Length: 307
Image (cartoon, rainbow, N blue to C red; front, side):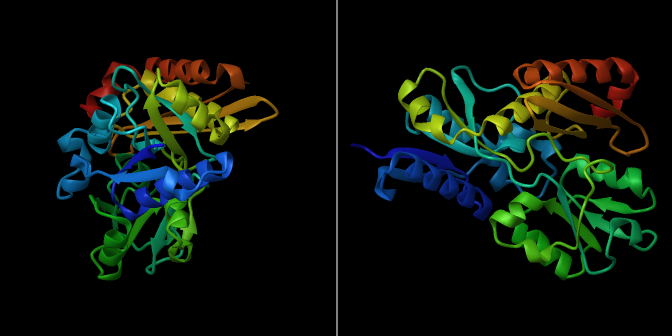
């Protein structure tokens, strides 16, 4: 039998996520490693590292090449970081599986101060995320925030070289790379809410491929799936690209989903947040309704800063 072809980007984190997916599938179906082939593709988002994502197209930059080969059958499935996924996917494709979520919090990394709040006046913090930039400015308007792209090791090297006083990365990614020891402090998800999807690995496949659906079903984590349905519902009601500061985090307990979402202006001076709760079965609609409500509350002028 031909091996299942798993598509991924080539970064160390993307490869770690693809290997985790393969290992879970091997265990679930008692299959050898040779039953799977990991196919590494370079995406536009990987190749263009000297400009902010907002300037070159947003989240789809990390998925387009993978989705092209998924659509035409060259790949059987594609593994992604959920926070990189656009809300609108190509026709015939969908996110069918979520692995159990890792810790979704943001990690603050610095040798200059133990916490973001303790950094000296006019310190410089590097981040590629508009959400993190806006949240940093909200908490510390005196701080200078600069765009800071590149692989994890690249950003850590820039920090060590003194280009910035601090940076922030997803804790989940650092854990998957075995780099938890670099973390100085973990951000409180109440005051510094994570990106929708942060910490969760998702698997995209053709929606009409029953063979792949059966392959993936045993490794789908129901609570993570419901939480991400809620968070992506929130994104879908707003903009949900890398051009917009949107935060959102859903948790599941006893069949109930609790969601906290926030939208901010890029300068962090204005924000609107919302909390909702309801049955996990209604997670996607709860998120969408929360997004619609916060959009209406913010008013059209608020979104002019996003353009």
